[in-house]
Length: 167
Image 1 (cartoon, rainbow, N blue to C red):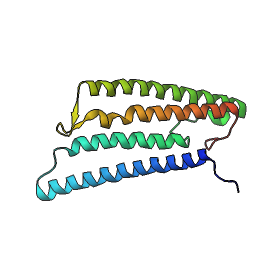
Image 2 (cartoon, one colour):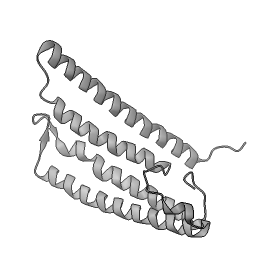
Image 3 (tube, one colour):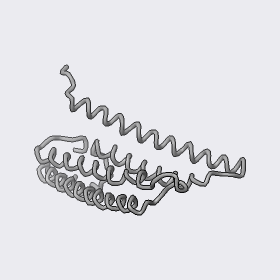
């Protein structure tokens, strides 16, 4: 058995970090939602910030989940015609799909970066003016940028003929 390379270790720690962030976000979202429900139903009170917090947490969970799905090439896809394609045509088709996905995600990263920069410029605040909103929106350009990077890597892997889990 060979010794794991530095890239293998980096990949393993990156996966661990992604999974940990995703799990923390989901648990935090559930705890806050349940606490809010209990406080409203039992104590007839609630917290003013929970609605905004839950909306932002759903955004984070969605992007972190998409990042995790992209690492293993597990995004949803419509896959009707691939059954009828030859392996060579399928490889080129998948290459083009991965390049297109990388391009779209790169565009989303670019425009979401502009959106977050505008939010920062206008000094929009979250949670009753206690925290800058752009901190929480920063997952948008980071998430779409990571997904674009991964699909660019997937496209090069396809171009070079490497197999992946979706083939």
